[in-house]
Picture (cartoon, rainbow, N blue to C red):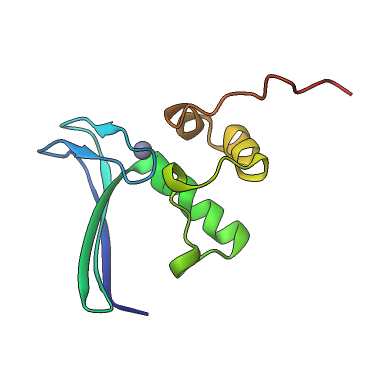
Length: 108
Ligand SMILES: [Zn+2]
């Protein structure tokens, strides 16, 4: 269980951060989603691209994946179910994760 959790959107970052979702750099001056909390006594904080955060949140809502189940795209196995969903609904994020159309995808 989470003891404390807070989040906010930073309009323009003043330092470089790496996105916890896609692993890519968030450029200085870009908007970012910032989360901070305490989980079983350990503090955590992370920055994500606004688009990456929106995609993860949408995925969690769709799959009821919260807490331990919450998606962290860069650490997830490349599974056709979520990668094709991401490519269709959040193409910017899919591109950041280098998710490309399956080579052997054949028109029916
Ligand atoms: Zn990202």
